[in-house]
Each structure stands twice: as structure tokens, then as C-alpha cells.
Image 1 (cartoon, each protein chain N blue to C red):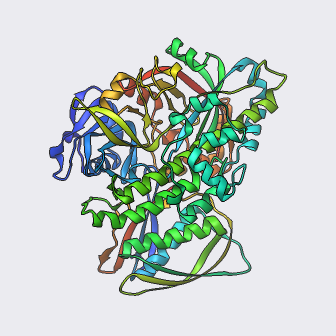
Image 2: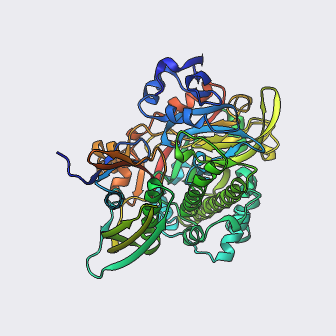
Image 3: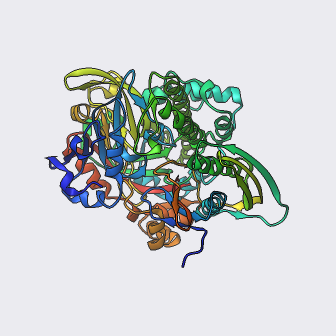
Length: 137
Length: 483
């Protein structure tokens, strides 16, 4: 029996495909972030915690997913920050408010160029939500 | 799903998926492959993606897929599609995140027998002068004003800074300076990502490679290019770095709304697009051209640094250590070109994603010396395998919007490659074959193992058999610098 939340990587010829599942949208966003960091091989430094607040708006769940992950990529690439604690709230009109805690990255092994919309569709299942995300690497 | 039975043979090297395959296709799909290659083609979703691409509004002719095709996102890698001006669409996903990813080939008069003792030093020097790897900054950092100049002028900016010669520019697609770039259409984020990365190789499949010109197939064309059998050459494969990635990300996001606004129905949201004549389409085109110019300048700076590396190691040891430019090509680009389609000269936007422009002889876009032979087409292999120099033909103008293949094409996922190949063992094996390897990451090296790619020789035989390119020279790798 699978846990109610998680992620796993699928084979993709050129890029990376991540399957993510969670009982609800905030959980799905958190798992997607953790999965993306796993693909990138992110290792966070111990020590001082860094915090960031995010406020994002999208037209739908898929758009919010792309915006959220793209924002994390931006913080990774420009500020060398990664996060391992997530407090995420999403209202009914896909407005996200998130408080993230993490730290500087000791290293990451793979450059993720972008989060794509390729066949992106958040599916409702009996156990929650599920989505496959393709990253350009 | 596309099955083998859906493919209609046109010749031994060309197949068609007719419009009748799916109701929303606007044009057929033509793919270049041998029957033997089709088995690999069917292993992933590249043909399904080509069928999806064939639904874009304003397409003309057919969607073309090259034999190095593989699954991407939205468009397949190896895809070519042309949309009619003024109201056909432009799709950022049909060009890719690494805008103007491309290849530059430098030739030399340096014979292998003279250079052999210094190959290890050359690999070290290239590795030192050409920054590479995940998140690595470039060899120079520019101000916002300088970045705007790079966006507008591309290689011409590099020329003014002393990183290029006029001959370099002449032998670069678009002379290294695409017109119509507007930095005002580029986001603050893209600028922030672009400023520190100029003059860097990046990671993934990007590389600098020293090659031996192993075999000539067209001595006259090779002579025009300055490629002599037994001499060294250098390939540089990279693109517009985070600058281009951010521009594509920004516009794929913006176009999510544009498709609704223009009432465009698509089978995949990554194919989002806008009419070329619309403000959104014009905005993307102007921003994409900024990234294209950035990439030209980037490869130019890397070429300058490669010359410094050769000069430092070989000065006084060889008669002339200079690396002259053979050509610089783009393989992720959208270009406004005129093509003959159904007997009419039409102005179209050619999307090439993992496909190389391959103009045939006589094309006025080519530098004078290349007009009699056709445009050089650079087809890099995969570290342990050959690379090829081809030229475009009349056939490529007639059948593939003046396009050809761009590499060997991935066969295996990165995950699978890492499962079956150990990076350190691969490095040892390649070194044992006399190929000097410099890599920042052994896992990254394993992902790019030659086994993960198709047979580049088969890919080349296919485009030559199909008549969309002609062989000039085969290159053999001597040293590879991977990000």
C-alpha cells in the first residue's frame, strides 16, 4: 500500500518526469517541491535557517503548481536556497500563501532548466490528487 | 498513440502520418528514418508529440521530424514546423527553453601527430578557460546596459569587446546578430539570470570537444571550410543559459492566457502559442531574439577562450595554433524565412527544436564562400562516437524547410543510463580509448554515456539517403569537457 503522499521519478528519454500524489493541493505542492529537489540532488547545509514567504496567484491548479515550482527554482538558482519545511495554504481561487524554511544549498547535482506544462493535469483520485510533471533538464 | 501501421512509406528514408490519423491535425507529419530505426522511434512518445504539434493553427506543408528524434515536452526533439505569416502562430515550446542552443565548429592547421603529446594539457586549459557545470557563473559578468547591447547585437557586441573577428561573424548563422531583438520585452528575472552567465558552458549535454578530422567525403567543401584530414577541430555546444530558460518560462506562462483569448484549442498546454501578428506573438519573438543573440555572444566568448587555451598550450610548439571558425549553427530557434510550399513562395515562421537549419547551395543567406557548397550542418556525436560535418542540399529546401538533424538523439532516459553506466568506469573506458575526459560530475557523465544515444552514423546515413544533407567530414573525439 502506497503512502497517501509522495513522489517518484519516471523514465523520460531526454528530460525528467515526476509523479506526485497527496490528499490535497497544498500537500501536492509540497511533495512536488520535495521531488524536484530530489531530482536536482539538492543537499542543504546545516545551521542557520532561512525563511521565505510566497504569495502566488494562478488560474488553476496546474498553473499554481508550475508557478510555485518555478519560484523555488528561482530561489535555488539566484539565492542558492533550498527548503525542507513547508506551510502552504491555497484558497478556492488558487491563491497560494506559503511560508518556507530551509537553508543554503551545499550542492546540487542537476540543473533543472524549467518546469513544463507538458501534459500537465492534476487528477482527482479516490485517495486524493495525482499529477505527472515534466522538467526540462 | 501512433503505431507502425499508421506510417505510410514515402521512400526508404521517409514516412508520413497522414492528416486523417487524427481529426485535429491540420497538416501531415513527415519523419525521416529507416525501417530499422522505427523500432527505436516507437519506444517513446516522439511521434505522438509530432502529431500534437501538427494541430497548431497556421501550419503549412507538414510537420517534419528528423531521425535523431526523441521525446521532449510539447514538440518532439528533432521537430520542424512552419506557420504562415502574418496570422499563423509562434509557440515558445516549439523552440524550447534553451533558445538558440547550437554548435560552433572551429578548424585548425594543427596536425594530430604534433598535438598528441599536448592533448591532456589542452583539455586542462579548455577546462580552465571555459567555465562549465551546474550553476557555474560565466567568464565575464555584464551590467544591465551591456546585457541590452548583447541582446541587440549578439556576436557583434563580442566583436566590439575583442572576442571575435569579422570572419567569425560572417561564418555564423544570421551573422551572429538576429535583427528585431527588443530587451524591453525581457523580464527583470531573465536579465538577472543572464548577467552573470555570459561565457559559460552550462551542464547537461553541453560540451566542448577537441576532435580529429578523421575522414573527408567532399574534399572541395572541406577545403572551403578549412578542414584538413588529420588536423584538429573544436566543437562548442551550448545555448542561452538561464537567460533563455527564463524568457521561455515567462512566455509559456503568458501564452496560457493568450490561447484562451484567441480561442486556440490545443492537445497539450506546453504547445501554447499566439498569432505572430498579435502583441503576445510579437513580444515573444522580440524576447526570443534577445536570447538568440545572447547565445551567439556566449558561444563567441567560449570560442575566444578556446583560442586562448590553444595559444597558451601550443604557442611555440606548432606553427599556427589559431582556431578558425568553420560555422556556428542554431538548433533551437524560430526564424522568419521564405520557402517554396506547393509551388508558392511563402513567408513562414520555421520552428526548429533540435533541428539544424540546412540551407542548400545558392542561398543568399549564406556567406559567399559557402554559397556554392551549401550551409555547413554540424552534427555532434556523444563523447565516444563520431561527429559529422554535412552541408544542406536542394532536397532540404524542398522537403524539410531547409533543415536537417542536430545530433545523434537520445535513446535512453538519464535514469536508465545511470543505472547501467558508472561515471568513473565510463571515464576510464574513454580514457583507455585515448579520449581525454574532464567532467564536473561523474553522475552527469554517466547520463551522457554514448550508450544513451542513437548511432550517429545511422542518423547521418538517413539524412543523406533522404537527400536533405550531404557528407563532408567525419570527426573523431580526442578530448571532451563536460559541464
